[in-house]
Length: 135
Image 1 (cartoon, rainbow, N blue to C red):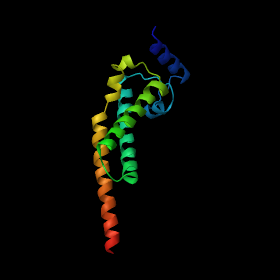
Image 2: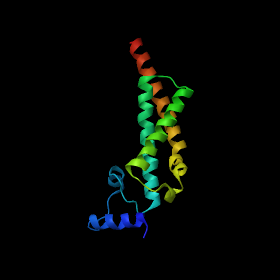
Image 3: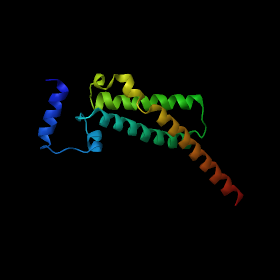
Image 4: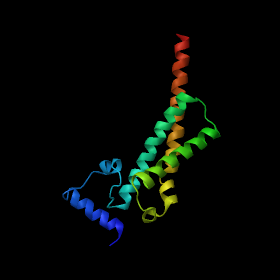
């Protein structure tokens, strides 16, 4: 019996046979994932949440977009998710296609969301600032 199947069996017994919700598993350390797609969905949506949060932070801190800003986003986004799945969840990366597959899961979508979010917040900020000056 592999270690992941032992963890699944132990988790099922500890919960009394009751299935946990996906988000409760995502927020609990060392959770057991019955389905591969379920964990990949969590990675995808956590990455989108990080993109929105970083987009808002960048707008209020720098108000400019540059290659450095883009690189910082990539490093922080990939780093946070790597720490999440390797240290917090302690999953076997090889079950999901390796570290690279987990790191790139939903990355381009989150980068696009980051750019669009920054654009919307910057334009809104400048519009409100110019409107206040005119009145």
